[in-house]
Image (cartoon, rainbow over all chains, first blue to last red; front, side, top):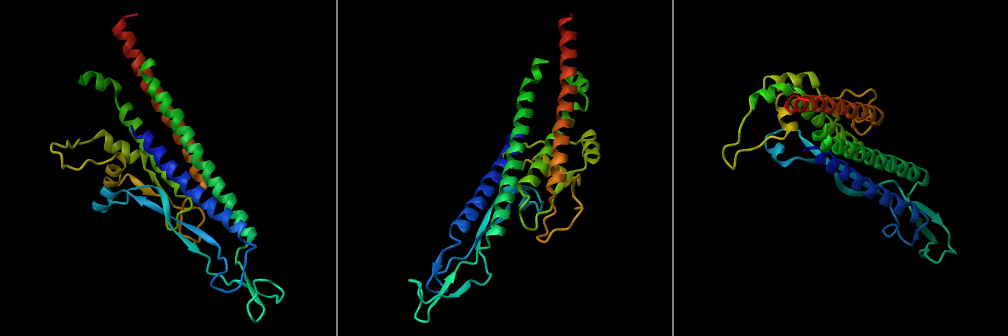
Length: 141
Length: 131
């Protein structure tokens, strides 16, 4: 029965999208963090997805794939906000502080996209569950 | 036994194919945000043609490799890549609306195949009971 494999695939999608939502939530929560040096400043995080390859298929040089997983969590490479504010408790000797490079609008969009992706996978599970239940009842016909 | 199998005809394989197709489409949906992922689908006509003239390989030893339905369909060229309507920046060719529509339709087709099989079974049961 391969309908349960569909559930595995969609389940991997659910957990991947959840990680993505978590990183987005962390980005939004940390967007106001100010640090006293460039190294300590908060950089936005992005989850990078990767397809899970079916190992036996890889050996046979086939492109059979399974679900999805998180390849890595990447730091956003865009420049940080360097601000001159000598009164700030975190300011360095020249009076500068570094804010995060998180763009809240982008994060909201990322969050929406992740939640839509999550919903799609939930629908897939729901549908395959219905089909599975109907298939179980085939002998009752 | 073979007469009963003949009676079911291609319905059994058709159900398998529908299932394989649903699996491929669910992979597409799960990988909607994966960079460089290319959406795939089952060429149903080619897959059914193959099923009609199928040579079944049997695993006679433990270390013989078993192919999943998807793998054997890839091997016979029935799994095809989708041509996207719009290109995307990260080379991902999954278009969610398209995949959703195809998944919904494939689920309905699965139910249709199931219904055909159910009808066959109830017909067979009637013939056995004689009522």
